Image 1 (tube, rainbow, N blue to C red):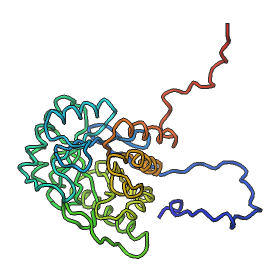
Image 2: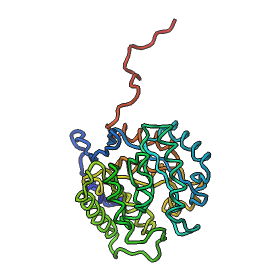
Image 3: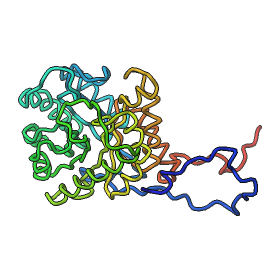
Image 4: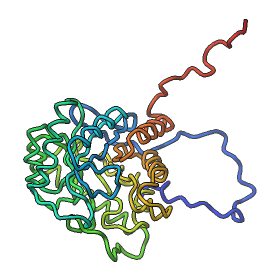
Length: 331
């Protein structure tokens, strides 16, 4: 583990009174993330990527991302692009076990017309398909998929090979071994709070190695600790704190935090009221080296991740004129 992620604040009564302030500031050392390269574009600490969620469903957990008809999804796409989305993540099945079963043919029928429209209307936008089924990704390949978001950790082993075949990237995720659309119950990774971090690091490293052996470049292999999936709220919070350890694996890192249950339980809020908590979590993840942020709230997240990148010193301010020129004179 990286040492700074385990720093504890000492109680005031234990602070020594004879400690001197250092002679001067040291060099600020922050995690240096590996770039993600898709469709000829590189995303890194200076250029974080915002991934917009567009679900072609009527039962997604957050009402704002439900688009059961193509017209609604098209409108959402236009808003996302206008608000600064770099990646459009398209899904046709609710992630959790609530809601109706969706067959592969139904999933294809939901996502394919939208993907075709998105590629035609915005030829340069990066298209991501949120699916665990190889046949769905194969059917969508003709539109020019750029990323396959395998939220269910290689449940379908053929999905990775489809992504390699079509030249798309892959999201390597961690679900604790759960099957698709399974909600966590009685989850434990051990008695030590860091056991979940070790488990996730091992699984992501193994998944990334499998992708590399299959022919997937490291810069197209995106690691996602997949908070909430196969995890309690405490697990998700611990993993968020250890984002830098995931970055240290040497691959670009995705944090899909938006409006999730660990935020809702932390603040006792329903999905519709979790924006501020989501932004706080994204700020921490960005500071610790994550560079891709999956969100239901594109404009707010765009501004947040750009500001974090600027505070880190990776991105220059758009303007830097305050106090730089001669003083203004009146009259």
